[in-house]
Image (cartoon, rainbow, N blue to C red; front, side):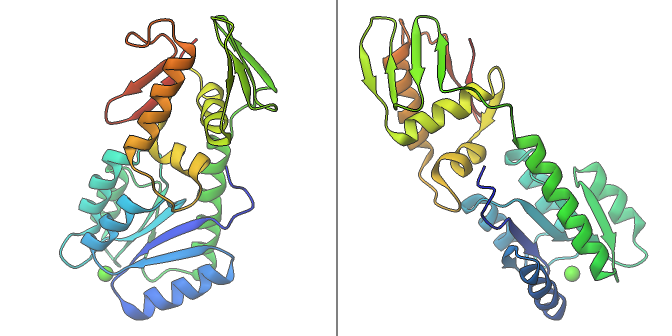
Length: 235
Ligand code: CA
């Protein structure tokens, strides 16, 4: 987790004045804001960049907010979403929550309230992402990793030099032992903000880990790919 970096927000709102006012206020609070004015560009941004939060208007050109929400939930199950629903449309609000929004505001809303909710959602998400950290050394099977020295000794007694990114990915997977770590989370934690290597890059790292640490790399015991979801370490 890059705690020192500004949290990033995707702001999906087609009313230009509101978009501009919200962007300005969020930036004043220290957030990094990307703007989308319609459904398709929102989805495109979500596919290409990492965000800590999405503020999503319901009434949008081309693809409405509810559909955007449904689509983004397929890939980003934990991404906090705050929906903005039009005045007198409690149906939108209910539907939005049913489809997986984390919070909502009805227009016109109080700006202070929006900023507070944004802050709360982002903090909650960071707490969920912060896992118990492991020490400098970690052993599984007859493998041992020294995260500080960027070295490992495997079950055969071979010494392996790890790249910084390899060590970071190992640490992330091990800290989330027995849980699927999503591709977005890996990219965020290991490659940093908004720099997107291809899925292939992560796959290659996993293949290396199997080569280093698995006795039978074709039937991995420790490093698993979970199709369409991410990667998992089991011990
Ligand atoms: Ca709108």
